[in-house]
Amino acid sequence: EKATAMNPKFSSSPFLDGAAPGEADRKAFIDLIGKDNINLWRWVKHLVSYTAEERAALPTLQKDGKPEARSIVILDINPWDAATDLGAMERAIRNTEINGLHWGASNLIPVADGISKLQIHLTIQDSLVSADNIEEAVTGQEEYVQSMDIVAWNKV
Image 1 (cartoon, rainbow, N blue to C red):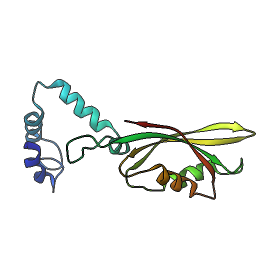
Image 2 (cartoon, rainbow, N blue to C red; image 1 turned 180 degrees about the vertical axis):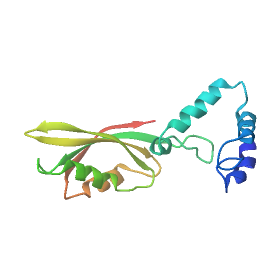
Image 3 (cartoon, one colour; image 1 turned 60 degrees about the vertical axis):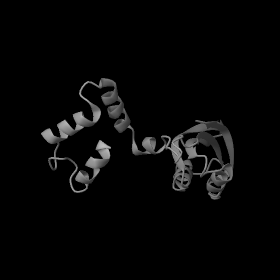
Image 4 (cartoon, rainbow, N blue to C red; image 1 turned 90 degrees about the vertical axis):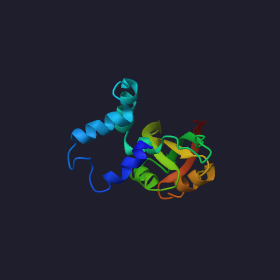
């Protein structure tokens, strides 16, 4: 409730005292978090240290207050041959935007005869993204992608 009441004050300035944090900001933070709540302060600091991509992958709540169902998926993506530009292939795949899908870490795995495959991790919101959506997005990059395998699909 306190945070909701304070929210409009930040529409024109990043801090209560203007362009830099001041005494009003310190007091408001203590009022919101509490002076002796060290573990809560640590949690806030840890949470804001996440990148935007990592924060987007955190579970959201449904209207009933339960966490939104999410899955972590690992894909193996096979190029046509050793001449395929794997960097361009990865960029093309990552440029595919699907609501509820967040691309994660990737690495190249040698297969044979100078050919490597791209292994990429992603987090999906189960109600918005299906296996068919993922397959269409990846194999739609026909210039680069020969095939795709789902290596792992874990609910979180």
